[in-house]
Length: 88
Image 1 (tube, rainbow, N blue to C red):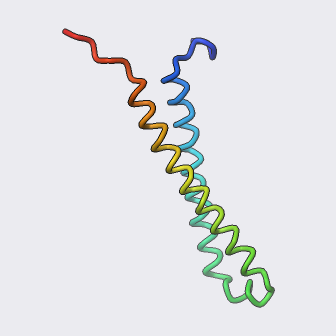
Image 2 (image 1 turned 90 degrees about the vertical axis):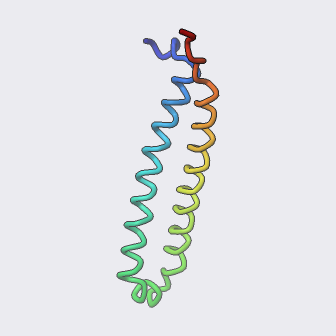
């Protein structure tokens, strides 16, 4: 099936798959950055870099939350785009 021949449902499902992958990596990034932060918190504060790293962690977490919201909205849209069940 060509790109132009996709249904709206297929397009929504493609975007959903991409957003879910982004969410996975965003979550991993937050967890990795948090682990590093906990290890070096004192040193970063001494170097006056603690606040900037904390800001990045907050922004990454906000991205993760926004991805979750958009995924939920698109899943609801995909449910409305499902073709009606065939009658027997």
